[in-house]
Image 1 (cartoon, helix red, strand yellow):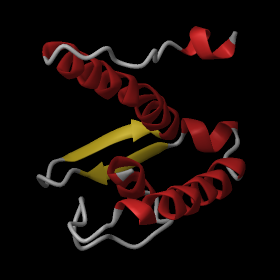
Image 2 (cartoon, helix red, strand yellow):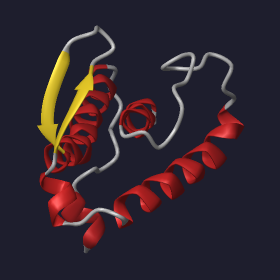
Image 3 (tube, helix red, strand yellow):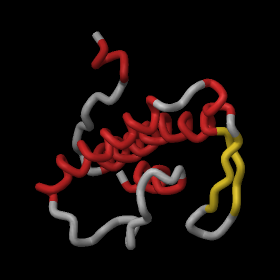
Length: 110
């Protein structure tokens, strides 16, 4: 959720959080926060057209480096990056002898 909120901030949809990973967040608060984030993303995405997707967007990393990518590039990165983290979690679970959940899209699409 932190990365998705960070991009909403960069796109000018929300204000910047004081912390990237707020330390006071309770587990019970996460479903409402996720629903709110999904609603903000829905509103942002529905206003995009082909020209907006192709627009070059300049942004700054938390380390201060400046970058330029199209909106489409950024959305593609956001879409796929969570797969990387699911793989990391699966590897960590296997390293302690646990069996990770199936995360393949086609498995759940059947």
